[in-house]
Amino acid sequence: MAPYLTRREIAEAAQAIQARTALRPSIGLILGSGLGPLADEVQEAARIPYPEIPHFVRPTVEGHEGELVLGFLEGHPVCIMRGRFHYYEGYTMQQVTFPVRVMYALGARTLLVTNAAGGLNPAFRPGDLMCIRDHINLVGMTGLNPLIGPNDDTLGPRFPDMSCAYDPALRQLAREVAQAAGIPLHEGVYICLSGPTYETPADLRFLRLIGADAVGMSTVPEVIVARHMGMAVLGVSGISNVALGTEGPRETSHEEVLAAAALLVPRLSTLIRGVLARLPRLPVQ
Image (cartoon, rainbow, N blue to C red):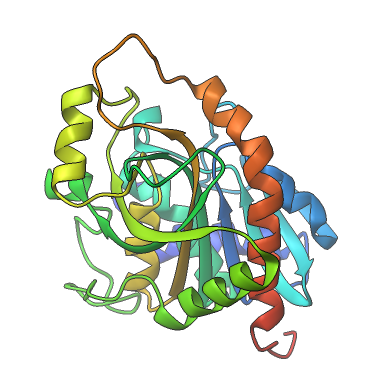
């Protein structure tokens, strides 16, 4: 992939996908660590391994299977990333967010993005869901914004507004679905760090002090690129562990994150499917 993303590379990836399926998705979904089983519920699914898509890189993290799934979920044509890419894997922010550009090129105008996150809010418990109300782009503040570089004005503006990154109407739908299903759903602020190390107790106290409710190593770059193109975004964090910044011998591990996903998947599946069921269905292209 070239140092900066171009329309040629987006088109090449989209064409390779279109050669495998005639489906044109209206909704894109990104599934976080251990949350891939939702992709098994897709009907009439076409499954394309990432290595078979031009300019897609490979996820190297356990719990990220590495395939694009296109089909129908709750009657909507969808494109699902079963596994995502991370900056800490050694990829550029352009590579990390490239699939969102491709989803848009295929027709998606709504993005539902999920992640496994550490809970900073003392009210959170492992297995809880948090609807992302806003985020803190700590990685971007240090210079790792996916929009750095030449801007293609046909994709989006040079200086996109991020005052409403997470769509209020989609968040309201999520609240309604959660209430009807009896699923506890918090709302809060997600903060993105680069990883791959987990946070020190001092890190965690600082993150809580500046207003974060959950912490993770993804999502924000993808949301920025989606909003650059005008996509409506719903973000949901699955709280995999509680990280309150207290001193002590307890350690956080990726295995703990994956174990919590077993509890999170049924709740997340119910929430996402419920939101999709309430969204108006567009004519299938």
